[in-house]
Amino acid sequence: MAIVEIRIDDRLVHGQVSTLWVPHFHVQRLLIVDDAVAVDENRKAILRFACPPQCKLSIFDAAKAAEKLGRRIDEGINVMIVVASPIPLLRMAELGYPIPAVTAGNMSRRPGTEQLAGLVYASPEETAAFAALLEKGTRIGYQPMPTSRREDLSPAINQLHRNQGE
Image 1 (cartoon, rainbow, N blue to C red):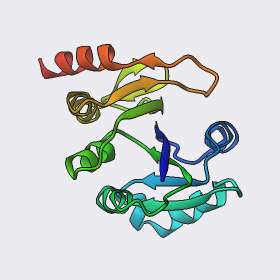
Image 2 (image 1 turned 180 degrees about the vertical axis):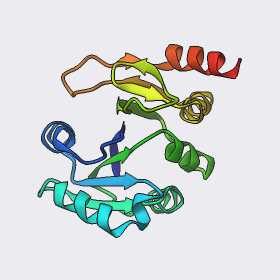
Image 3 (image 1 turned 90 degrees about the vertical axis):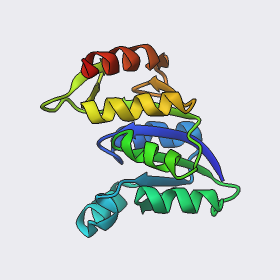
């Protein structure tokens, strides 16, 4: 299985993912990693409806995703992982699945969040997860669209993590 992109977007599957990111990477399977969605049949049905027809859709919690990906179950196809926050990615990394690079696209502004870049707002817990991924060697960038320039988020993450720790 070729993981062609690991993307953080709290909308999970939506128009930009379906019409821009999927064709850009020739994605054949979208893998949603979200502990809450994995047990919510209504949300899973909505995401299946939103999934582009050329893609298969899998929805797993972080532990199951790390286990399945570690077994290389989709050898030979292009897979894009989509998560709503960095927290499930950190969990996967802690379970031994390597997370080499992450692209943050949209993490909506919510109470208790601070802006990292553009449309990326993180809570203290999310900022700590980003910082832990950086410590594990994960490259983290911000790129809202495939045609946008990728911006390195590590300086902003480190600064916000220091500020939130004070």
